[in-house]
Amino acid sequence: MESVVLFKERQAMWQNPIMWGVLPGMIFAFTMVFTKAKPDGSIDWTGVWVLAIVFGLLIFLVVLGNMRTEITEECILVRWFPLQRKVREIRWADVKKAELRNYSPLTEYGGWGLKGSRKNRAYNVTGDRGLQLELNDGKKVLIGTRKSEALEALLHELRRKSLIV
Image 1 (cartoon, helix red, strand yellow):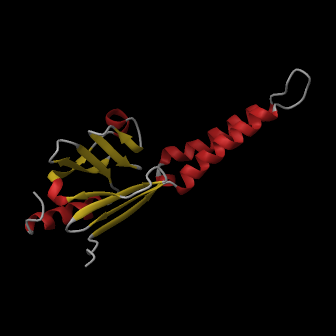
Image 2 (cartoon, helix red, strand yellow):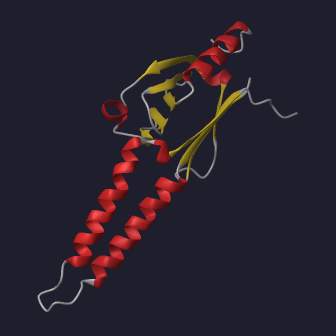
Image 3 (tube, one colour):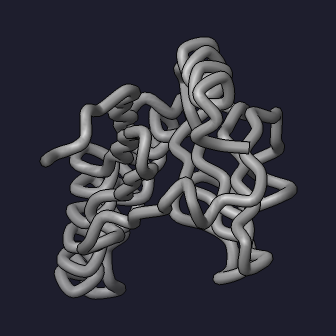
């Protein structure tokens, strides 16, 4: 029997305001390389192609990059596409503590995305609010959210049902 999804959220990378600065920066850099001529007056096509490939990959990440979170009574499922091939499943039975908290993406994790270490991992796209999980094995996982009120209500309901601590 498949579990009922109680909470679902999809956050796209383009929702992060910082990403809106990436495109103008890329256009500026591309223009600088494209207009920089060699001493003989010809264009440095190698530089143009390298930048085109790098910018293409960045645009791919910004346009297609997204994080999906689903929560059921049994587990939390999170995937940061395209950085993760498989969905990460965190069973509630493996969670010692779960709470919503404010955090600083830059100072605590070095920015947005799939960040941190094996012991302290963060999945975030934008904002400064997230679900902090402390697992039974001592690892910590932070999952960013833009729906903190709905998530807070769900955590309260799961605690009321004694499904989580």
